[in-house]
Image 1 (cartoon, protein in one colour):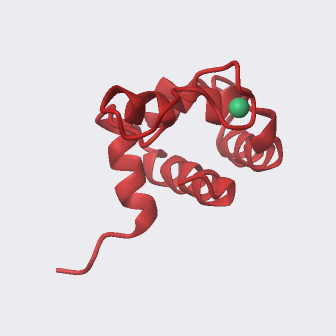
Image 2 (image 1 turned 120 degrees about the horizontal axis):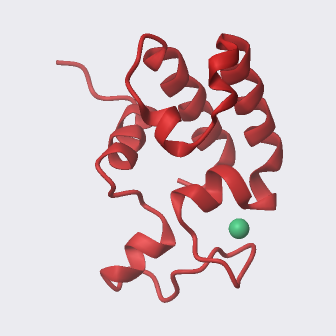
Amino acid sequence: MSKPRKGDVLLSKFRTNMPPTNKFLHRFNIVSSPNCEFCVNAEETISHILFQCPRYRNPRLQLLKEIQALNPVYSDTSLQSLLNLDKNAKFKLRALEKLCLACKRF
Ligand SMILES: [Zn+2]
């Protein structure tokens, strides 16, 4: 069996609600603060990284462009919608993976 790609491992952590974000890692005393290192006063969650943090604005815009190009149905770019396994799941997950890797956060 081949080694899972880094992006696949990340996506599976997102989907199982065990993302390597500061909020999650802080729960287990792995990092000292649950906050985003860039925003300081905001907890670093998946939603924060994917939808709010100004640090990841450019990769986020690229992701949204790719998702919306798929089908106008994806004007709903909520985390839930992104992680839903529908007929475009493979494409959406690859776009999400690209964003995660472009963020260089994980
Ligand atoms: Zn932030």
